[in-house]
Length: 237
Image: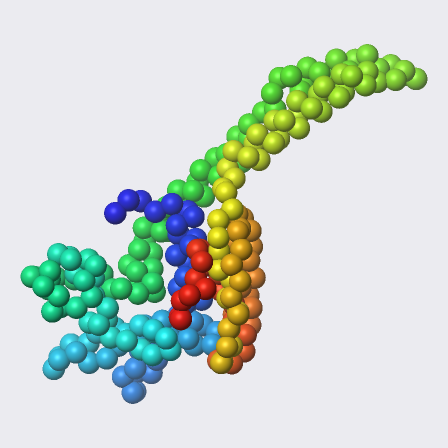
């Protein structure tokens, strides 16, 4: 598996149960589960597996599904059943659920994001200088202006044009193309989906809004909002 990119991490983050998450439970009744801090939407809980073991469960269409029903087999990653003829060995390397996969990859994600933070901090500490043409043209125009004199309009215009071109290059260096995203607003009994092309920055802004709206919804029937990459209008989830 290749190292994840920041856009991939962002997309995965938007597809999981909205956070922040926390552990809850009660030792007297032997209960422990992972859920969203607001609304207590369960991310993962546990059930008995055999006589002396337990297994996690994850939410699928508002039902908690056992991890044993969501395996990713090492010998046949696309198989969904132990009884698939391709599964000649039962070793599992994952759980087929976005929340489970997000938990498994969280260390790797943090590692990538910390490296990106370090890169941006270094860039801020040593910002690129404007091209020499800007400084020279502006300096010449200013030198020609004395008390009561008019500035050299052509020189100033040249300087501005060079500077604007440089700014445009800097702004465009890290931009990403707009790609389809699905914005979903849902309540108890219905949901509305809109598909629109968004840049990474636009998707991040809408994502923050979606998180704030979902976090403010304290009951199951209050509106919740999420954003995910791609066209998901045909999904039932």
